[in-house]
Structures are given as structure tokens and as C-alpha cells.
Image (cartoon, rainbow, N blue to C red; front, top):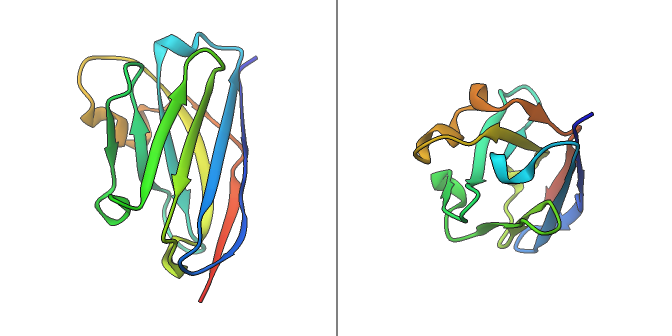
Length: 126
């Protein structure tokens, strides 16, 4: 049984930082690209960042230079370091796993992901 378990969400003031973690189990971690998505109230779930097995990564334009995605293939974990947080970053953040294939751009598409975590709330106050 595949499980993706997120942690690290919480309440932070604008300008602050949070580090989200996702622990994966029940899958062959090396066979998956890993992504972070987020969903704000009343909005669709949107892509935030993703990373391939080798460490290549892509970001949504609004988080570039503020967020950093990383993975530890030995521990089956993926992290999202979020700095300079803004109120518009407030959302439920989801970890997801997509079967690896050639290229990187596909990891920005929600429909490419097979497995999803339950999400962790991030709230940024102004």
C-alpha cells in the first residue's frame, strides 16, 4: 500500500519560512518523480514544484527563488523549503508521486501523478 505522508505545515507570518516534508512508503522511490501541489479555498489545485530522481527540478514562476525542492533517495523523502512566505501562499499543500519518464515538464501536470498525500495546511498571516 502506497503512502505519502506530509508534515511541517503551520501558521507563519509573512516573510517567514516553513519546511514541508513528505515520507513515501510502499513504492519504489527511484521510479517516481515527486511533486508538490497546493490548493487554496475556492481554487483549483495548482503545481508548485517537482523533482526527478536525479535531482532536476522545476517550479511555478510565483515561487521561484523563494521555494526549494529536494529529495533524499536513501530515506524516501522529499522536502519543500519555503522562504519569504506571502499571504497568497496560504493553501493546503500536497505531496504527489508520478511515474518517471523522459523529460521534466510532464511533472508540472497534475494528471501525471498516480499517488497523493492527504495534505498539510500552510497559513501565512499578513
